[in-house]
Image 1 (cartoon, rainbow, N blue to C red):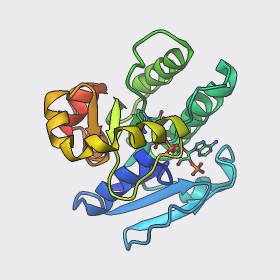
Image 2 (cartoon, rainbow, N blue to C red):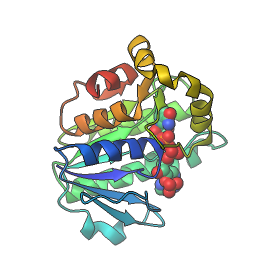
Image 3 (cartoon, helix red, strand yellow):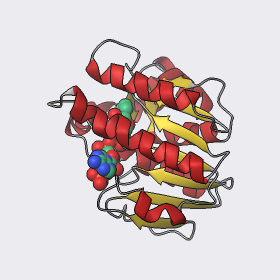
Length: 220
Ligand SMILES: NC(=O)c1ccc[n+]([C@@H]2O[C@H](COP(=O)([O-])OP(=O)(O)OC[C@H]3O[C@@H](n4cnc5c(N)ncnc54)[C@H](OP(=O)(O)O)[C@@H]3O)[C@@H](O)[C@H]2O)c1
């Protein structure tokens, strides 16, 4: 499987990149981002684009892929709906549509967020994106909604709120296996999340939405 990955410079994307590079099912990864993720690996190629809205300029490099994993995201804190939707919805769907046109039969996994079923602006935008993706004719498609994620070694979130939560909960990290077992609906790890996202694009998930407990089961 040849995978295009978005967000490898962030916490979720880096967790997924590590799992993809370790997986015998993944032949090659093309990471598309604004800056390098700093990883060198024979399976990995990076395509750096200062502005990710400029898809048209690189279309010819996007052909021949089996799957796309989307882990780009921003916090909604301080943003109105239009600004939040610009990255969360417009950028995601622009790439999803382009990749599907260039690679009919491609699969897609979208990293949404725990709580996306709830009220509030950010959840509404997330559900809109999920709904549109679910209607698109991908081979396999799914959305993961992680709750708290324990990052793998050396991985940090660039989103201040997430990173603060990680620092505050660090004393609990030794108990991560216990927490995942006791509260699978709240806790996961970047390893399990990465594997779950790979399972989605391989058609191994049993539903479109994977909440935290599903992520732990599918990516366990
Ligand atoms: N971390 C968590 O605990 C958690 C929990 C639930 C859901 N999530 C969701 O998972 C997704 C990823 O979270 P994360 O913790 O990995 O976030 P992160 O560490 O802040 O990483 C965000 C990623 O998105 C990219 N990005 C942001 N704005 C961009 C833009 N305008 N153009 C291009 N790339 C852009 C960043 O690229 P640059 O390096 O170029 O900035 C980075 O790769 C988000 O949607 C988040 O809501 C995270």
